[in-house]
Length: 206
Image (cartoon, rainbow, N blue to C red; front, side, top):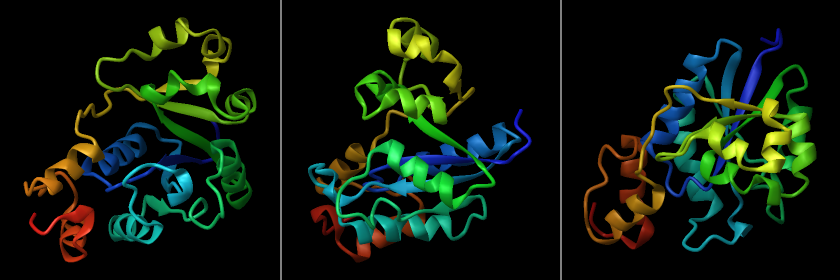
């Protein structure tokens, strides 16, 4: 294990942030003694994802929870840009900001399968360790074994053991809102009430 403390970067659209996002972050801190904090990095609305809430709303929702947990850091790095940054760019900026720490990047197996198509993937996996969350019935070792690029860099990947596996996605929650169903306990209470008060996702009833 490294002597320097690690910060784990958790990127995503967080549209909206779910209980499972925060549970995963807390679990990662619990599991690895060298991981000090998790940095939440919401993507820019210029990311081009359909139905993505404004930067402000997604930042505000994350802030409601991150402000109450000393192990969580909220970063507006990507929100402050005039374009969506590549993951490598984001991680390099964070590394400069936290030069005394080692930076890990949290990645789901759904994205692991596509990693070789990302911008400058060789440099990304050479400079930063990747914490891998297995999605659904995915097996990290099998995915790496079947991909030449991943296999070549297999020492860059760390599987998060006993991770929370959840089929509940932000799109599932958005659809619940649109059909007038309750999302209570799928998101933290602070976020539940924020969505309700701001009538987000075209909902009048939660």
